[in-house]
Length: 280
Image 1: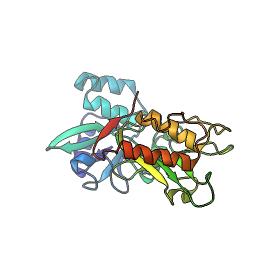
Image 2 (image 1 turned 90 degrees about the vertical axis):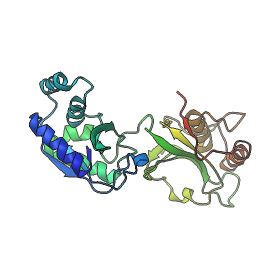
Image 3 (image 1 turned 120 degrees about the vertical axis):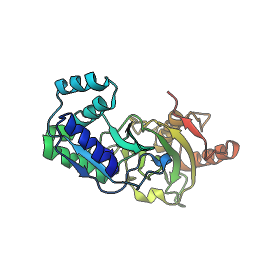
Image 4 (image 1 turned 45 degrees about the horizontal axis):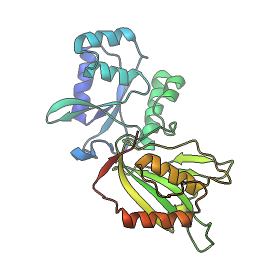
């Protein structure tokens, strides 16, 4: 990947000089979500360097001899031809630089879809399906700083069991994900939309913290003693270290958990500027 026309032109010239095979540089739609702290969002075009050949160990060995195993040339070639390796070239203070990016947080689903289409056209279905795509497999954690919230929503006057509790992740470029638990057969869900959009309304309670590399807590099943509130309270503790219920998670009705969240907010006000690290 390249951010900005200058970085793109310099990288392509270097690839040609070193006879590293590539097909073309394809501009991706929209803005780049990374480097927010450097004011770079929307300041330049984002390009994908599309490979023309699959990974070749001989090419990598040659680049390692030139610039070292962890040098920018070896890193960029690996990102160009291997799946699961994410690097973006950019210009910083007038100098060429290379940095890692997160396909979940720094790219939009539309951009990820274009990357898959470009890879499919260049190297076929198998390579494209293993790489970046619109609907990617659920990660164990999200990289970077995210605003993570536990939310009790969809609460009306239908009774104490009304409403739904879920975890919301949102980063600086407004990429948003939701983790929630439903009765079987739906089960656990993770995606960029709530299964029921009405649960984003009538918010009864919420708590938000800035979390570095937050966990995505999966694998829960709905049981008679473990509902959406139990999942969300347990996930929140794993993500932030905060225990909202002294009696543990389990079968917490949305309104009950909402009261606990309000009490926790009163006793432990969230610092909107503080960033915590998701516990290991």
